[in-house]
Length: 219
Image 1 (spheres, rainbow, N blue to C red):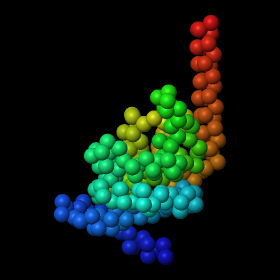
Image 2: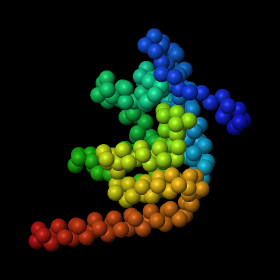
Image 3: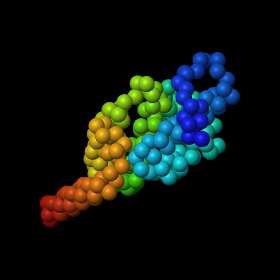
Image 4: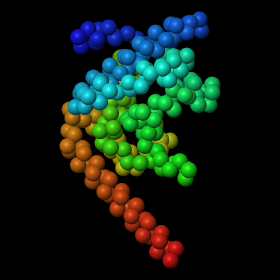
């Protein structure tokens, strides 16, 4: 079954011409998100989290996300970006980010105060890495992809992403390790979780010290 899926999903994404009809876009979008889900599943298996790979991005097949994204199908990039460019927002994305905890946007709270990034649990950080691996292969092409691509994407993304500093530090560590050690590095879960706990403790201690310093200044 796995070998059949692997062979059936070996296709290159073709950017549709202006004459492509809506029905064809539905089929093309279904192929794209299914290929992405399959590749993320393989990455999750490699990283030791197969169950998360099975559940990954199931909401993309819901009517709220599927039909909206299919209308803006691009082939070489996310349809969410195209919808945002036209409308200023994406209904599919608003639905998606609120239901998928591997997106850092899910973990931004206190919006009335401008938004505050929260610490993301380790298992969702690891799924985020697998998501970037799969997305890079789908939109950039499997032939052009290499283990340094997720790190390069993160280096670009980190300049504007609202991610808690502790989670950002873990992403640096995981993606640098993946670049040199591939999936065998990602499977060292207990080691990485302990490291993450240490990173979190240091950040919380620094935040507590900053609060004490501020209160002393006010007094």
